[in-house]
Length: 277
Image (cartoon, rainbow, N blue to C red; front, side, top):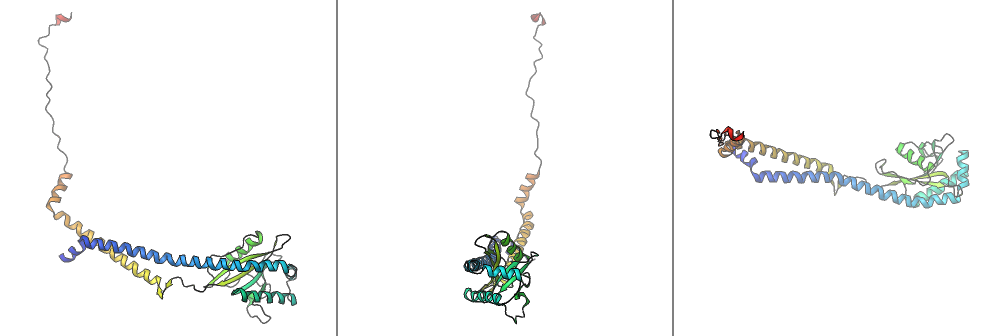
């Protein structure tokens, strides 16, 4: 390395700029990673709470006006005019409440979760997931969905939404349809709400993940400059005679000199032993 480069890296100003720029790039990269998570959490919470507010009145209405119809369909697991009327009710509610999917879930005699009725069901439906008595755990639904629904059957006050995003942009919410007399859960009303914006890693057309990569590169370059500067400074220190002399002085063992013994001993020549007899 030439002398000019050594002087450049060892300069205090260069070291200060590298340290400041490295800290700033590290802070911004962490910020770019945390901001999308915060936006995502806020969006899911907002849509989940809105979905619960819309579902609760519908669940109360079903429990008040349709309990016998629901019990009949659960007991018989059949279709017909009663089933078609229920599907029509759900279809209108789905459109009015602006859900992507609206359905009722029940537990059969084997305690398996099944679809009681789906707003998208028609006799010519090709999607098996919306047909009567279809398994609830199909498609993008997972064990977390099953756990949430089962907890509502066991504890009627456990209405809620899942904090995960399903199928790229969906937030799932569930509320109980309870018998007004016994407070037992007849079925669970589920809804899939759609996020209007789901790409939280992008802002103003700028991909934050790309920004993080650039900031990490800047941070690594700054750390390299600091390392080189420290190394060059360490090589130059022994050339300074004053420092070398001070170093030798500190490394030398202290010299201990023996002090002269100034104690004089009286030979007792002038003492008469008879004085003590």
